[in-house]
Image 1 (cartoon, rainbow, N blue to C red):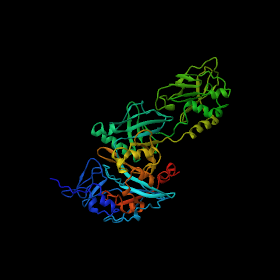
Image 2: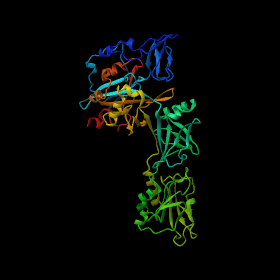
Image 3: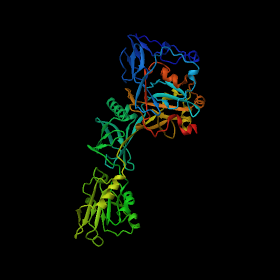
Image 4: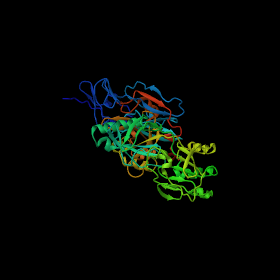
Length: 530
């Protein structure tokens, strides 16, 4: 029969009243017979032997004490180093004076949820509830690692290349891990992960989905295949690799937009310009831009469905050729010219929306386009299309629902936290990075992983994603919403002793510079302090 020693719950009310004079023995996790410790940081409840780690590789048993392996990450403004690790002092028992609970002058330092550990299930307060000051205002930041089953990735891929039909399954290692969603202007969009792939399918599907999400969130490359479409290598902040070819440019605009942008520059150099695009192919002489410049009709005839003058839909099927179509020869979208309007010697430029494909033709006596050398003056305008194309890039946004018992780590009345966030009284960050809080019910956050410190994300084998989350607000607002005021500690004390429960607390601190220099400092959120 297994023997348990109590130690994973809250300290008694008497302990709280002692202003953190808590004995270490009262804060140990459940210790099992045979030098095993039961970790309750997630629902798996690993029983870890001395010197071994749990299934998540985040917690270990060190001589009967559950410890958090990774250092807690603290942002430091003005830091020139990407990462610097400091050892925490020897703890022993915690003995914190009233002064230790006063706000620190913490301009330039911010404790993140990365490596902070968690207090799952959160009938216990969050590991760090840190008092600080900003612009003379007393602040509190509640810091924890959230375990997210309800989470997904929204992936934006800057390319006109055809990746696959809308709603097509996206696969990783043969398992369905998401789907293609709507295309946006110059970008293809994927939705990856989500609770149904993590927990609603087979164990393998859940495991592959979890690993794929962790890799993408931690800025590692992942190869996916799209049913009926392309193979794509995705990596946040890097160009996508589509069917083995690295993309270079995001289009300047659709074919019609390109006509409008460069019409004046083509005037007098070309008799006709066609900008090939999977969405809207533009024809200069028919386009309003050409009409305003008094361009002569050319007699050109374009295959596809005419939308408005000079704008054509469905000139070809989607693909990886010219302008995101399936064509390699641009003349394939032309019908015979109108012989009553066209003339021998007519100068025709055909180009794609990125300028990566272009060709110069001159009509012969039979009104057949003949390839010719492109004049330097025309080439300069085509090159300018390329200059106006931003680099093709993959963007990964983590989307998660911060619900469940996570909120109980902040307050004993969770709905008050939700209401305070919606009233902009609470700034929600992830690893110190700004997040977007979706409207409507609950706390649904979205964050750009490129703005977060490297290695921000972990996993637990339930399977679920572990992500840092911080809630920053005025000290007075925290008290009003029913926060755990007895667990508020100064920044200095938090850095000295680690997480309040002292089991699973990190042995080291990793100082990092904010990854995105243009990100607002988490303690200086204008809606809170204005």
